[in-house]
Length: 439
Image (cartoon, rainbow, N blue to C red; front, side, top):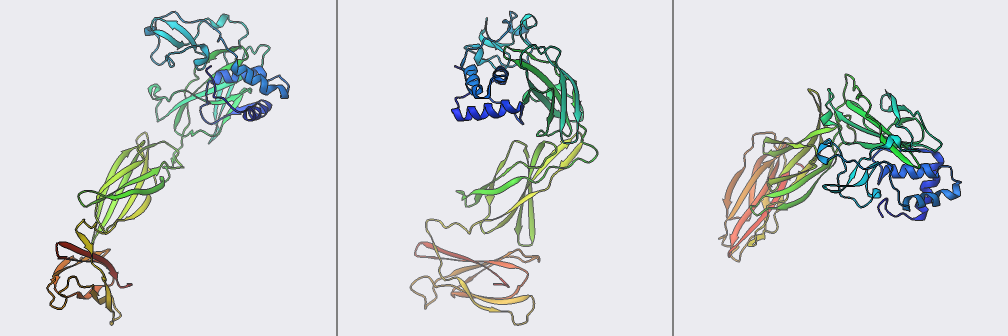
């Protein structure tokens, strides 16, 4: 049996007692399952006493329903290309909306019925008489010439596209946005500004429906002279930080769309900034709107990156750049190879700022490597790399046989990365340390 998924009795009782009692079935997105069949069962059970409504509704869902109308005889090739629902089917219950399961030369497919004008007991097609713009909401009104003696439930569908000019080919698929027994609906939960809308209606009673009405004329919601750009992307974060085989690090930058966006996001811009001594390097990448993650490769060790993501919307020739979301990434120290060991004891043993100005002197020491510590046969490579330095400071390397090194007149506005390496007995020893005037 095709239809809605099985539900517990408590859920059915709640749905029937609340939905039918209020007779107001507005929703903000596409209804699940076969919305026409669902509306038919609601209409059929509307006048039942409240205690009988759950049983009536459940029985309606489980009974076979032969949809009104006959099967078309025209070849499928003659049918408009925009006709949906040509999948295989087993029975009318399988086909969504007003479509019937019909035998055809190409197989058994869901197709729109014919001859509904002569079918008794069906309500007429409704007519949309007005669409009104109330700022952040739209109101749709309609009439129905012949309701018959049965309760009628209406299904309201919309489609739209964003743009200055109406382009039928850009319209979204039809989506059911409301189910009600009234002849007026206020849509509060759909974005409206800068969009062309079309609406159509189906009137459904316990016998079925004659299908959806012809779409109303396209209705444009003017966004006005001041169009707000999208807000910043949400939940910006860095994950999967790891080393590559070539000694670099890599990560994945991910985010979710902006919560506030008057118009759809057309693209994202990713900005990557890296401070290298006194220089700041920038990279920019442009991504399509459906991309919410971006892999970043070739990240340097012991570096700080400033990552930003910006949402971009467009309306006609207007480009609307939103506020950037940002996050800071600090990469790890240089990865030790299998033959690399940690050089122990790297620390500051003297720190002098006697002048009280912006310069300072330091002595950096470490624990000697090897058994011939007295003879000083081990050679160390001492490297100093300026970090976050506003001045034009350059990195330098030097060799020493001592297990310490003195540095003079370091700038207090800078931070420095100290790296000490040496080789001994087939292994490499290395350690790093960051220092500054506040150290």
